[in-house]
Image (cartoon, rainbow, N blue to C red; front, side, top):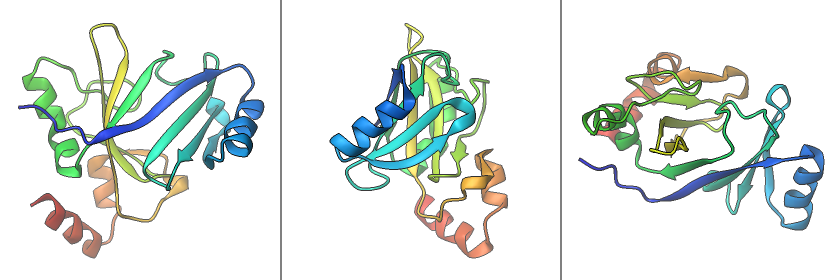
Length: 165
């Protein structure tokens, strides 16, 4: 089985001066600043409407992926949730946010979005991602899919269940 990719969701660039790059993309190109992670020396900007396409900027050497190449593909939530098994069946190791093998997506709570990572033959970090229709939780960090679901009110979980049916 193949995951049906809808579009390119995000791209990441390594930059020499994070503040200058934020100013360039925000002030000159009109991208909306979405989030800054000072501890990782990274910033994220929305391209177009919020939640549609994102640009990540990383000060050289600060990316958690320890690589300068990362591409995320937008997919339906049910496919992102099923993707660890699909990837494994294809001989690809699904990875969590920190690059460890996993059997479930993670939720990046500040967006929020569900995602799963994996590598191509050249070591490029690839990702399937689906925006969630829930309020962002900027202080929650990155959680496993199961942790995120347990932290949601029952009515939100029932809405998600209907989407996944």
